[in-house]
Length: 192
Image (cartoon, rainbow, N blue to C red):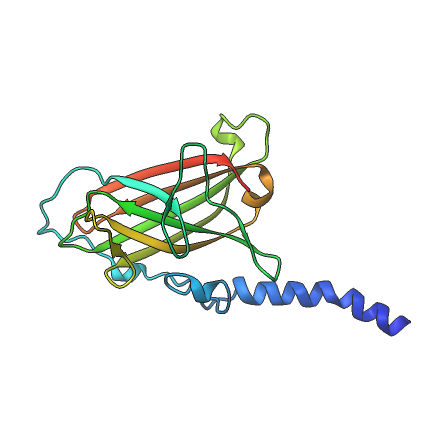
């Protein structure tokens, strides 16, 4: 009986070790869900630089969405769905379309911020806490071009914690192209 109790008491430690080994190593995590992520949960920021010869100006037109295999645009008041992993973790599949891309420069630096609000009034900036952030560079090897000529990036995994339990979630994206043009978009709603 005592041996069985010791094994049961050790389970949370084993589970915590397994979870932290997956997400908090110094190296890039491996295994699910990172094996399905666009970059295997890697950050490739060294692959991005501004091209001074590009003369395009203006803001990028962003459409935020969700999707691991197909793009689903987010309606007003809608945020990406929460996916639950077999080890107890939660994540979202962020997705993005650029409607006025620099087609000669198929590369984008994408900054994603996921925030949560557990208060009854979320109108104040102080009510929100940053749950997680992710930066990555999308290029011609990861993006697709839609029939309309838009750049589309799927399978951007962001691990979440508070977002899954707070009630309200917010996803913000800041996108920069090699011409130095930027676009910003935000969605906010009930997280589920």
